[in-house]
Length: 388
Ligand SMILES: *Cc1c(COP(=O)(O)O)cnc(C)c1O
Image (tube, rainbow, N blue to C red; front, side, top):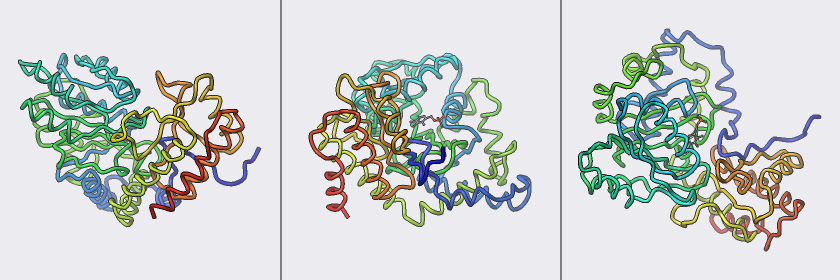
């Protein structure tokens, strides 16, 4: 049956793709070895450096974010290398499992899935590593399963206090272009991003910012790699080309996305996300519900994960809201399955879109019988009006 009006895609990625980006993608594919492509490639690669805030190369793989995770590990490490990882939630766990499958020796600092990376625990683990066996520290900036953002500069400071030589790798797949991030300024060696979240594109591209130290490690690293080899990519990119067929039409979209972010201004983009996140939290508090995130300093600006009271199935609630209002919400992942739902408020988004989303959530919860203390919608509206 046809559903009138717009579908609300309020999962924390893929996000709503703006019409301007859809139109940019909807062009005839061009010769990826020709002069027009070269111009496009050089322009988007330079634009990505501004988004990651780096003077060093950014690599684009035709792959989802998971591909860039793999590339980060196999390009810098050798079989059996020890890496330090931190269990912020589902995505950190998937990266850890990948490291094991790739023949690395990851050390996983366990946590409660409600908190960010504790820099002191990173410091402690590095201090105990007297022979400097740990070759990399890998953390997720914005843990999309919990709505918790880790304080990356403090993790860098922890590594520096020990004077440990490990590389520092950060997953920014759901924070890039939604929250402040500085690849160079924060001393990160490898930053991984993806197209379908803050960058407002369809899925299919992943990005990797690479520091000179990471490139140096790359030259010694012995993990097997072929499609994801950085060297072949960087060599071709320097001339404005790719070593194999790129996702040309997604690059048209990326070109438009970078332009849109810069027209709005990254600082304003970040402020917009922070404001929508604050209004969403005001709604959650008014409802009398709890966010998965425990610590006020660690709330994510790109999504909010909400815990339902005991006895309510979050997946059944999401199914109800989709059926009634054509609004998609994120499911609880891993150990939060059935207990939490996630509201994505990142990407191409404004006040009425947020209010429409929160109205659907509130109506859905009332119809579902979830006891609510007060109207979250009214609280969110008040917050938005107070912070124009
Ligand atoms: C979405 C996401 C991923 C996975 O990316 P895919 O594009 O699905 O491969 C990894 N890490 C984080 C933090 C994410 O939000």
